[in-house]
Length: 376
Ligand SMILES: Nc1ncnc2c1ncn2[C@@H]1O[C@H](COP(=O)(O)OP(=O)(O)OP(=O)(O)O)[C@@H](O)[C@H]1O
Ligand SMILES: [Mg+2]
Picture 1 (tube, rainbow, N blue to C red):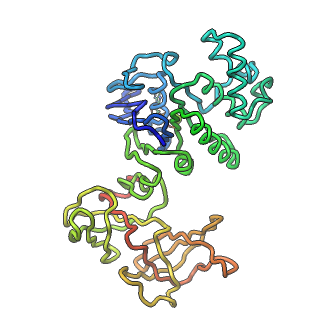
Picture 2 (picture 1 turned 120 degrees about the vertical axis):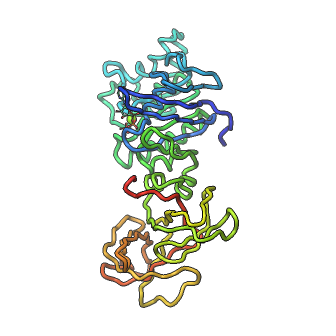
Picture 3 (picture 1 turned 90 degrees about the vertical axis):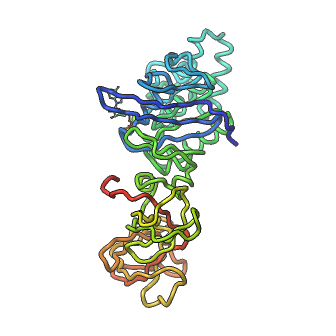
């Protein structure tokens, strides 16, 4: 379990480079022992946040606090924070042992203490037998373990990881993600990971910060940001979306549910986000591909509650354990549905050209404030 006390806090932090705003009034509160991921597209300000926490940069406006103390002007070496940079930045001429021992030598610890601490941490990342190798004699994944060991040996309160897995192949990346997650649980240290990979963010994190253009769009558990995105950007960045235009026709159950009149017909939506919409207000209705139900048109009789739309399969996309079905509705709108393979059939149940009845799982709709989709 993660504690509730904030160990790192950014309050009203703004930062510009050459007049361009890289961070705009950012508030993030990171709990002790939590695994927090900062997720967002390239250039949205992720590394800038890590640099401010690590002390490599100072905010123009606002405060950065560690353990409740404002540290805006405290240099990196005086902060109980260590960073694993994307490039790993190992010293090429030093052995693995010396790379990891470097920080402890600077702190003038005794040779025997250093030897013991380095040996322990190398065992932890399963690199004990490589202690005498140089970085160029290691694979990318092994170098990464050394970089993590070098940061952890200083026993930081907070470990910052910047795109640490992006250089690794898929299998190794998955392995490292699991290893790092276990390590974090074992050590009880707060981890802050930066990534632009939604799957990685969801795999690793207690909470995710979704960023765009220097703004925090949403902070929540992976499930919250996926199932209850606050706006179209978050909805689109963390998963596939089917969006329908609609407007609020009436309020069914005070602030818990609305009747939404959407372009696709009358649909009843249950609000999952704590937002209040006015009657008549334009909205977007989001359905994830796994919320869409499809049936052969010939098999359709009647499904209680939801309207049924006629559509035609234009494409099927193999995804390993599932496949996506791209359906064109009669009005020309395209809908994406995720299907599991039918165990009884040799292959997919739906094929190009098939006529379908399209509906959705009631109650899984998300109502979002109206925005133009070109902003995505
Ligand atoms: N030292 C700097 N000088 C000038 N501009 C900078 C500097 N550091 C960052 N920026 C700018 O600030 C913005 C945010 O950069 P940042 O490195 O935080 O993005 P990022 O989210 O980490 O992106 P990526 O995923 O590509 O690493 C970018 O527009 C970048 O060009
Ligand atoms: Mg970056």
